[in-house]
Length: 165
Image (tube, rainbow, N blue to C red; front, side):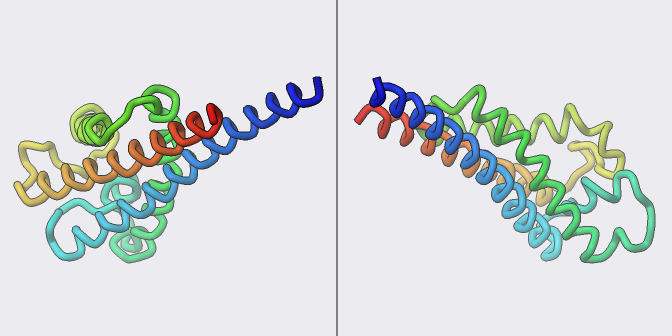
């Protein structure tokens, strides 16, 4: 009786720890890849920076052109990335391999640049973006999707494997 109760408690703790790891992965992935995006815009690989999405779409003040707006935007993207990580955990965590994660990243790019474009009035339509910006942002979203998806799937499948041992 007591050992059965301990097993149930361990299952709950493992599940909670996988969710908390997924949230950490989401926040870290959002911060890391938006920081890389900032670097890409700084070195003119892309005309879009994190602040052009998050802050400059709604505020038109002089401070939004500086580094502070970029840092705040990177942090906010990290917080928004928690939603992405939860969605991946809920719907796609059982998928194995790199391809589901890569397709997830490409789907996110499509959602942001086609579906959510009216939310970001500061961003030009895809047909008006340079090829450098399109390739750079597709690659960033692809790598972001792979990071989020593969990491969450690995943690989930690892916890399932440990549970069965």
